[in-house]
Length: 141
Image (cartoon, rainbow, N blue to C red; front, side, top):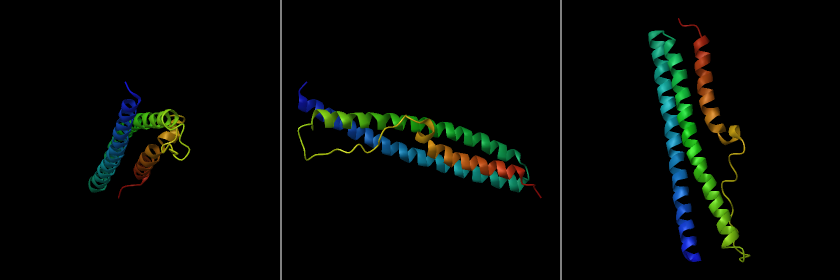
């Protein structure tokens, strides 16, 4: 395979990966929206029927949303890692003689720290779970 063909394949793969990263961002945003909608419904039912069982159901549901969100994030990080590797390869192989072109790796390195890579998942859903736990301890009137 010629060098130009390999370069074109890499660029096309990079474009596809970056498109998938954006689509996965949208999907994760939708998951968070679903979790807020469901929790709002369950909190409303809790106060309407004065039954805290809905809050426990909410905690279980949020845990399931955490798992779903994490799985999508893991797929997204796979694409980020591949995009970063492709960018580094292009820079080292095809642009090594060019002084004026500087490709910045936009994503950085991931998969070094589980908590840092998934912090938004844990912060968002952790806050929702904390609110549900607080509501469990508020007396019903």
